[in-house]
Image (cartoon, rainbow, N blue to C red):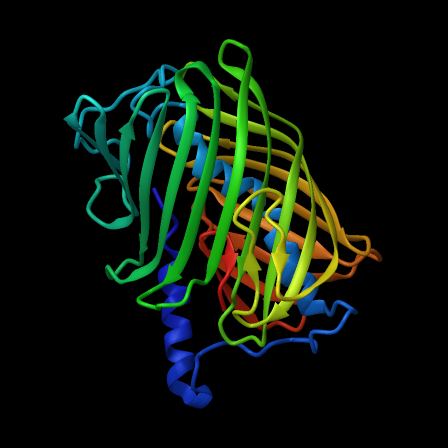
Length: 356
């Protein structure tokens, strides 16, 4: 089930837009000028971008490892009746042909599956020793309004069933009916099996976020370091390890990603580095069930993210090297929630990206 607080957030911002502010975007606590010295807003934006990278990776890749979005995987141990409601989740699997399968997974705000919160539709086509996947994930508020749409395409070589494959993906996140991407992601990862049901991951990624109402866009690229994966008998997927990256800032909508590893961000300036360590866990349906991440970034600033409760809430704190809080955030298991800056103003996080 989903936490319904995103509906209240969306309503609050809609009301703010009618109160004379024009855009409904909360005031920027410290937007900076795009220069070389990171501001507190730079710290909040780039810190969120770097610490959510492991979570976003897991949300896009766990379904391939456990077989719930891969027609060839043998790791999946738990199945659900097609189209049946199971504690707020409905899964429908349609076999189109011998080499094509469609997956439709719906996540609801309630256990009876009456209030749709998220729908993930995936088309998987196998060809020789590989497959391609087209995946669309749409998040809704309680009134049925579209919050975000994330379109992702995967190109996979190797066999996910063996745990030995290389995957490249391109993903774009849009808000509501906007034509401009609020975030873009590209990554290539190679999975290798070391023991049955577990192994290693090597790879790199690039991300760009374009938060509405700000003069700047933010970017992040990172390389995995000592990352491992495991799938248990229930289909739960755990990713553990570290990633080291670089952080960038540029004009709004002015950053671009290279189309191949190491996914260099261009169009702006590097403002610092980042190192993130910890683990994330997803269940057989792709629900995030546990987060424990820490890190440092920019010039000694710190990051700490933990999870608790049911439905799950993910709480993060971004602080200076001296321990002064720059921002805190709370999101649900799909990365939708609110970020609160040190001066008390707030912004929205949708699908693991600060969007306004």
